Length: 109
Image 1: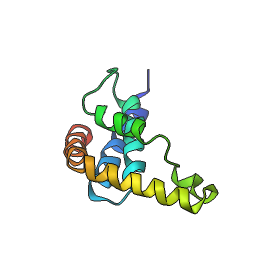
Image 2: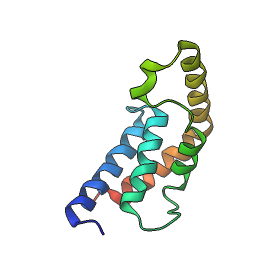
Image 3: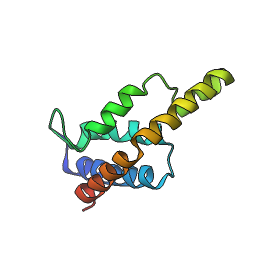
Image 4: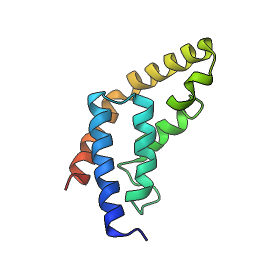
């Protein structure tokens, strides 16, 4: 069980991450991964419907290197990864924005 201050901080982090992802100030895959991970901190449901989309996209993109490892990757590989990330964003953009709005509403208190 998390203490109340940790839970408040995690709830705030969800709302902030959702806003950043929705407005494009964080890279799409990074924002999705962040929300997928935060979902486990703020929800006790195994399959919280507000986080399911983020978990699914994070799983679909788990082969893409995180920002901190990009400097260790070959440029050709990064080009391919960036292309895949853009395709994921185009495919899921509308659903992600709607899910982000739900999270902001749910966790901005």
